[in-house]
Image (cartoon, rainbow, N blue to C red; front, side, top):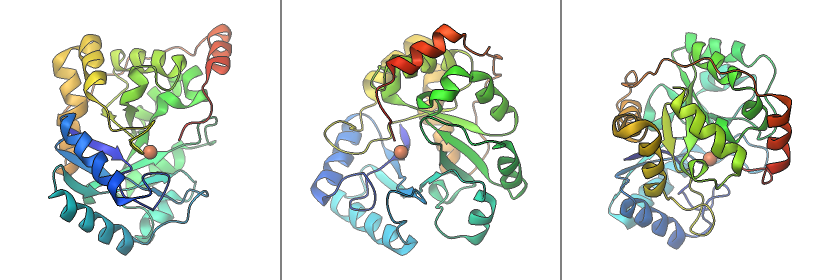
Length: 266
Ligand SMILES: [Fe+2]
């Protein structure tokens, strides 16, 4: 498998602080069946200073050295959405595209959706970029309004769910919509979004069992292997499901989601 979302670089964000833990994360990933990791440190998120590209390059080079590059380590980033994304991408600073491809991993706040997000997404696509939305299933607004996810896909965005969501690790609402959305053809990738060796480990094998049970072996493999490989090789996705237009959730479901949420996850 290829993990396109993984915070394995030490000392740059809320991922591991020490090298030992970073190395353990790589080892555990390999044991889970991951042969390639795209390291995706947070960039332009107000909580941490954005690391210099040279710093990231030297950290990933060191991690390759101490792990023997098993799994293979590639560099990317997780960009916290702001409306000037097109300008930031144009500047060539801060955002590191996934594995030097035209795909960029973009996260939203956990409890809101920026207004008029379609316009900047449209602009960056004119410049050749493809936005991949990180863990939409963990966003409170999108849980209640899956029709937005479908619209954004129509507008060219692609969707990545967190493996742990399929197992209920981010609460029942994230679990429910992740199951529904993979069945409805709204999801293009599954990734670990691993942060450490305690609560946010690079586990994926068990989630893949769940995924196979939901959508079958072929789609599960597309989400964990074939589409991520297309990103690494900088080409169009192999698996482009036709999304089923989901209805906005009813008030009761929205309230249930609100009260079952397990705090703000990043
Ligand atoms: Fe992340």
